[in-house]
Image (cartoon, rainbow, N blue to C red):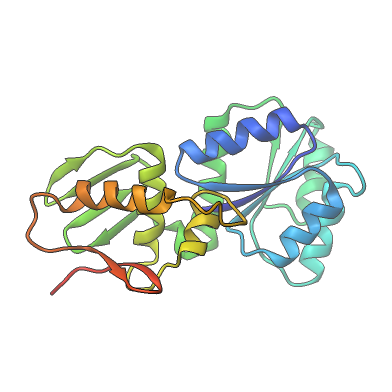
Length: 225
């Protein structure tokens, strides 16, 4: 999933970004309400995670304006305000779920994934398949031809992104932004190295290639028929 986290507690935000990354998801951060609203309005996110009390602009006003503009992206509101009236106010403002601080990351992740499933978006799928290659996002596992493939966290994210866009050309810029969270080209061979390692793991011992290089464009996951 591609997530937007609007949270002014930098330590908490950095922890969540890392935890989501280790779970195979990408989280973009905003530290205040104005920045968060701009990103939410112009980004293509699967779920928005919004702290209620923010500098410059409070979380509920962000949700309310997005809803007024017709934006139906699922929203989970985080807040230290946990009384019944507080939760009702958050949900009536347009939130889809409300989680009170402190919380366990496992619960936050489960709620975010549930929101994505209910939204019916393409990222609601928990399993991707390309030919005889299968990736299970919830179990964080990959198999080809019934054989388990051991992947490092970054390799898993890379494979997930490629499989989610199977049959499409995935450019280097798309990989940098969505797998490495870079919004610039670091001018390194980091993509080439990871693609080479991933290709070795998912193709070694199999007759048919599945990860193809599209010269001058990028890469494509496609099962040869």
